[in-house]
Length: 106
Image 1: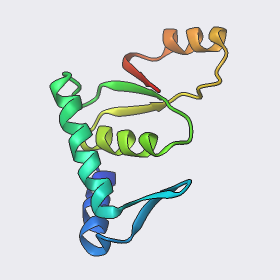
Image 2 (image 1 turned 45 degrees about the horizontal axis):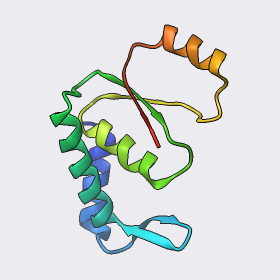
Image 3 (image 1 turned 135 degrees about the vertical axis):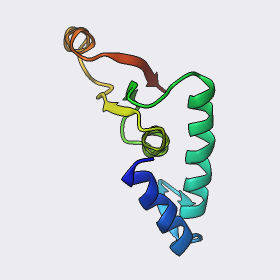
Image 4 (image 1 turned 30 degrees about the vertical axis):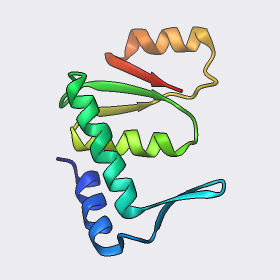
């Protein structure tokens, strides 16, 4: 497992009920964040995503980006952030250059 996931586990243990993510009028505690990360990691495993797979996250600045990036880090997969406003020509160039196994969008 990654240092990032190990860090999340430690913080969730130390600060469980404190706010971890705040988005608009909603928030997620550290315990809640860890729970969602673990659920998403299991979903990725069931989809066949594994260590060293390159996964594109084309989500923008939303809580799901953080949750999915942490879940992928638990699996030691490579997170490739992709700006949702990327022009199609730039996107095609990136797809040619990066060995993505999957792209996750909204």
